[in-house]
Amino acid sequence: MVQFYNLLQSVLILCLLILGTFWLKKRGIVSREHESIFSRLVTDFVLPCLIFVSLSRGTFSLGKMIPAGIMLMSILLCCFLGWLIGSRLGLNRKQLGAFTLVAGFGSSSTLGYALISQVFPGNENAMMDGMIIGEFGACIPAFTIGSAIALYFGRDENQKASIAPVVLNFLRSPIFLALVAGLTCSIIGLPLKNPVVKFVHKFLTIIGNSLELIVAIGIGLMLRAIPFRKLAVWIIAIVSIKLIAEPLLAGAGGLLLDLPKLEISVLIIEAAMPSGAVAAVLAARYGCDGPTAASLTLGTYILSLITIPAVFWIFTILN
Image (cartoon, rainbow, N blue to C red; front, top):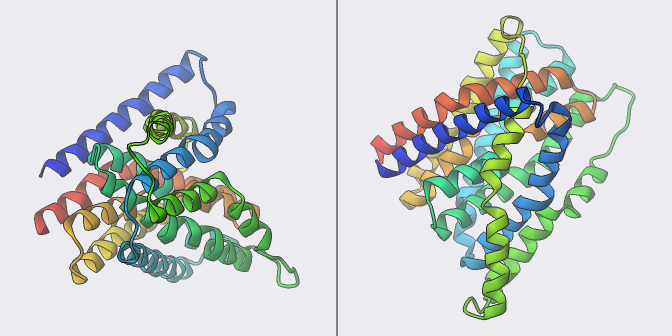
C-alpha cells in the first residue's frame, strides 16, 4: 500500500502544481504562448538527461523487454477498440483517425516518468523499467505505427504520403539519442565510482529532477475550455478505453506472465497515463481531425487524475 499512497500523493502534488500554473497565468508570469517552450524543454532537454542517467546506471537485459511488449500489445488492442467504437459512433474518416490515435497512445514519456520517479524515489530499477516500457513499448510505436495510422485516415484517397520524414526526425531527436547512449553505457558498464562519471551523472540528475515541475507547468498551460457537452460521449468512450481498459489489459498481461511486482506496478502506471500530446500532433500533422484529438487528449488529462489512483489501487489489492 506504500506505493499506492506515494502515487496518490504524487497525483495530488501534480494537481497543486497545475493549479499553481493557473495562478501564474492570472498574474501574467506565464501564458499560453509559453506552452511550446516548456514542451521543448521537456522533450529536448530534461527528458533526454533523465533517460540517459536512468538507463546508464542500470543493468539492461532482454528480459526487460517483456513488459514493453505487453505495453505495445495493450496499445494496439486499444487502438483497435478505438477504431471499432469510433465506427459505431458514426465518426467520419478523419475523426475516426484522431479517435483511434488518442485511444491508444499515451503520455508515457512525460507524465509517466515524472510519476514513477515520485512513486519509487531513488529506485533505479523502477526508472529503468519505466524507460524501457515507455520508449520501446509506447514512444517508438507512436512515431511509427501511430504515424501510419494518422496517414491512413488523414490522407485523401488519391494522396500519397510517407512516414519516413517523421521516423527520421525521431531517430535524430535528443530522446532517441539519449536512449541509445544510455543503453550502450548500460551494456558496456560505466565505472560509476569514477569522479568524472559521478559528476556527469549528478549534473544530469539535477536537470532530470525538474521533470515533474516542468511537465506540470506544461499541462497547466495546455489545459483550456473543452466542449464537454458536445464531446461527452466521445470523451467517456476514450476514457473507458485509454484510462481504464489499457492499464487493466497491461496489468493482466503482467500478472499472466508472472512478472515481478515492481515491473507490473511500473507497467500499470505507464499504461494508465492520459492520451499523449503526440497523438494530437500526429492527427493534426497528417490531416486527421486535430481539434477533436486535442480536446479528447485534454479530457483524458483531467479525468486521469481520478482514474490513475483508482486503477493502481485495484492492482495493489490484487497483487
